[in-house]
Length: 404
Image (cartoon, helix red, strand yellow):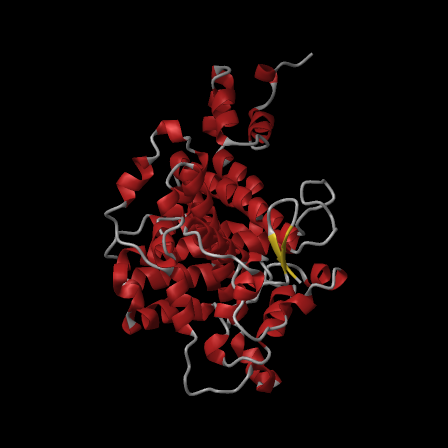
């Protein structure tokens, strides 16, 4: 009977490429010298492991996110443009960089993907529950994201992380018109409006995670600080948020805050709100011709063949001018529902597009509404539905607020 050491090196290498992660690979290499020798002779084992773990469509974003996180603070814009152009126009070039990457760098790619994958599951689960109807339980095997939905959710998280890597060191310049022009031309103009709205959805989710985790860990004042303050904290990136989620209070909660407190930060929601401000174009979305609508899509090859995001965004903004197409103040509750990240089939099957219709009057998101209610209760002030115009909001058994 053949043993591991009698197998040809090619077969041993093929076995190694089927392992789940780098930790399993490291353990396998310690079993015997023959396995380690086969690993050294067979090139690309680690790269193959990453390729098998990260879905092909997300690999360019995974590599780009890593490379942009390693850029110096004062990086020439020519280098930034080069990486972004490669991501949007020549993604295979970026993926090819993995061949020369050391193991530690490849491990970082895998770690970021695992973090984003876990955050996507959490966000999708909460967003689905917030619809408040008796549909598939997100904890059951019957509830799974489609291939396109998983890609769309993950891509939005990667894009938010790319923005933070490129612009977090701009500091308070994020409120500056010149900075917004640069950020728009360099990054946001490459996306359709509904794709930028997807980034607003993710940033709102990260903000809610930051508020929840910091409050539960005894830092109540930080979790319930003003929105601008929270957005600037989460601009330290997805790994920073994950560190807060996974740390215990006894581990020394001030660790990540101490290292990040003096770093410059940026508010992605402020920038998203500002990039669409076109005071000259007063037309509502419904008044745009087919050619006008076609021009809204980016000129790179469209990765997103499903029209769910576009349909949900169009339904919500049909009567609004261009200046209100991203991060509209009335649509915080829609972003809590991840409304531009679901497939069209899911939206139609469960009749969810009707919830995306733009509403008149100001509607607080469930997260912000809960904060207002808690603040008034702490101050001993009355809390009534009519005061907030919230008679159509209800709590479910999971503690979520739902509309309609």
